[in-house]
Length: 194
Image (cartoon, rainbow, N blue to C red; front, side):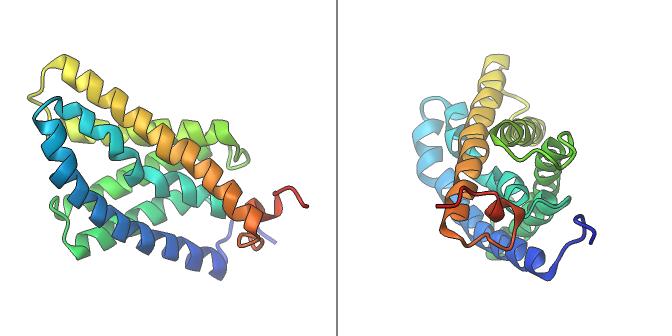
């Protein structure tokens, strides 16, 4: 049996994650453009990035759960498509973001040969996804910011992504595995048996 081939259950779970996160992305955009933007926009705009990491969670969580090449790209991109269909303020540009962020997170696991699924690999994937997202934002939206704001923004995006996607994704996978819902996946079978 080829462990790299996607099974029906892989596609279904990745799709459920993607649609769920697409709705979360849409709601998170309302928070970003509403209260977070208002609070931080008046004080220190780069600080709004403290909530950024939620947008990158599927790029790390899906590979941790499914453990197949392409899970991060697929889930992050489909989530972006769902958020665009729901009416995000960024329009179709979220598709490019989803593709790039998913690919960056995917690279983190590819660097481990798709054989390492621990916290360290999760952190590498989250840092790469965070750097990619911050770079895209600086290019498209914040190019006129002063250098110290740009550096702060990158640092805050990466820290948020490490917290939400890297650490959060790792421990969410462990928590789900502990319930038995991931028994059809290597991530579920790797849990400690009680």
